[in-house]
Image: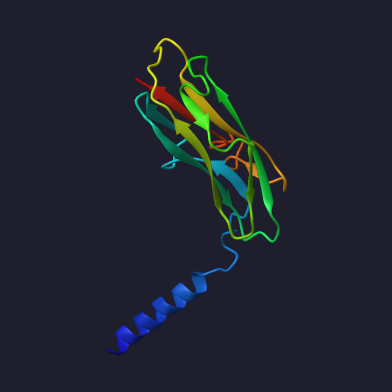
Length: 153
């Protein structure tokens, strides 16, 4: 019994001594990114007739001031605005008030047969922001700075 107490005490001291407060520094870089289901691409049917939301996310500690994010929309030669899709958000800007961590870019997809030989994609790209935060996931590749939707037959 005495031996098991000493073993327990030894293990407890070993565990407590091995814990260090500064062992790992937390990752603390604020960034803005766009994704859906944790990926940067998706497809939509050419028969679709609905409004879809593609969210731009803010990953940071709580902000004390508003954040304005500008984005651009670019399309391949196979898509036409008004025929294949309509932009519900027309300003190209989203404003994150303090406490808001995601904002939608809304696109109304319209039913229209496509030419499969053409580029039938639409890309939403984060262009700038008012607080100088990192755009896309931190790192040189800027993953999730843009999101591509491909319309398929």
